Length: 295
Image (cartoon, rainbow, N blue to C red; front, side):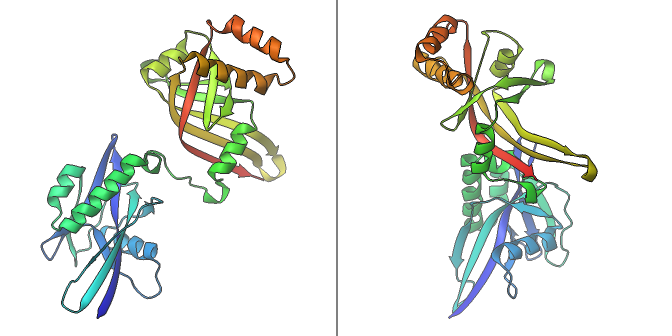
């Protein structure tokens, strides 16, 4: 029995909020997802990246967490495994490889499924699309350019927990960016804010709940080296107004403990009671975190 191994990727991009998938119209007459044979000591990702680059001219970034392997027999006495990954393309400008590819086309899911010749490719594309639906952080948010300064989610949480204020960014009036500095508390994987019952912040949240919140816990200028030593993290997610009284009171207690830890429980509750009706509590449900540090 002969065994063969190929690798490729479902290549996608995002235009005007729409996911577009790449389909290759091949010289041999079929339409497929980009893939090719593993060469030498290549890793699977190296093979997929090379095939995409050779067949389309694209440089891509792989999305973590997705792989889909199919097995079939291309001819008698041979078994072939093809492992597909997910890859994001920042550009739709392609240069098809004339020896193998007639044309490259970008299409939304329904159209791409019609184009693909083989059922196995259609199943792979559907699996990739379902993965992106379940993991919006994989395609809504760009990977960090300076990878060497990037920190993981656990470190992002440490940075956010260590701060006392940050800047909440929203879509303001007439689409103008609106950033507002706020105190906050990080609790059970979510960020809570408090404020008045009316104002531009609430208007923006009610119009579009998407937001980001940036916390900087260190910013030291190193004038001799023309650089700074910093720690920062950004949380992306959606905001909702907390309306359940028990949940709202718990958030206000957490805020009070964060900023006045030495206060007595009696005075803390008295203060919360006095301001409860006039106060709005907002919760940022985090979909994605990114952070970096230097020095």
